[in-house]
Image (cartoon, rainbow, N blue to C red):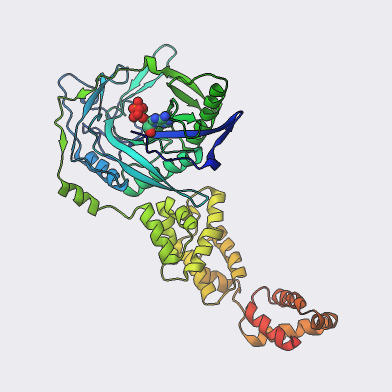
Length: 492
Ligand code: ADP
Ligand code: MG
């Protein structure tokens, strides 16, 4: 089934002691569906709360309880499938995945096995070097989350919190198309951005709303796929990258020493940056999947899907293309902006009806630098689109020069306020009054007869005069006017 998987750019090979290796990665991402209530009960799906506050008799698996499908969650899964340009299956089946765990009172998880709600799709990655990489999605299925065992509250007891029991998850399974840790990080980032645009998952990895099982194998270029290890429940994008780097190296070392890889489940420890064995496939559960007799197959019509499709928002790929054509943004800048919905909305508010080039320069330049410094989104820097737009208007109508604009930007950052008022109050207006500039030019010429003689020999020296005049006018003189007047007066 994985035979058509993509080839690796030889630049991405990992050097071993004896020749190159190719990395192969496939991800299973669990994303919590944004929904008020759980997948099969009316209990709250909200994060947090006191332990066992959000538990109905269905989630506690009381005898005789019956699950009832939450239509909104189905809608969210379909929406996600459409956002992944995937096949939507009009008929899917819920299965019981049987295993024992203290925080799983039913004794099984309701999931989808053979017939998932969403089939093959794709996620496009824009890499830093400009490459576009297409990662295949194998499937998306719906399932319930389990509860949580709490081991650290009592010396000899384990507590069980069922707040998460029954919360709706989407498991999104990629093909083994990923060929480097950067691609894996870009994939999770892009997937999260698509889910957030769609409003189907909040993507908060710290709260566990999104986590990834990372499957890693290595092979000699051109060889069939190697045996994989699965690193469970990785909960940050950075850790996904680190886990892959470590795991690839571990496998290469074993293979180069003549050993072989055991297919096993591993855990990533962020403190040490290492993965360690959790259980081997031999001990793996036989889940005895079978269709849940409490639930009918899930069926809906093509018209219902079309209705949902009509409500889809503009997604990152389409928005990126539009920003490039509407505002002349580079592919890279557009990619950076659309990754975060609030940032691209901010940019559009600034750029609409204004000089797009100036808007791009200010948003991707000074504003982005401040955002990076503060480690926040563009909309969180503390300068509103109206303020930045106002500043750009002042440059555009030549009230201030680009240089003074930088000072005004700093004032806006530190004190806030209205850019035009700041410029007026602080007397920062650009001097375009040629009389005033002429007077300043005359003064500089009169005070520097030696330099005047020099500049007639070496016209490159003119820059020095421009600098002096700008200094004399507090940086407020219109640079073009200064140049013109100087040239005329010096006879250059
Ligand atoms: P399972 O359900 O047992 O975990 P699957 O065949 O459904 O197994 O694969 C799960 C994930 O493992 C998928 O994301 C897939 O892309 C990935 N995968 C499969 N084979 C390999 C391999 N040889 N190397 C890396 N990843 C792989
Ligand atoms: Mg798996």
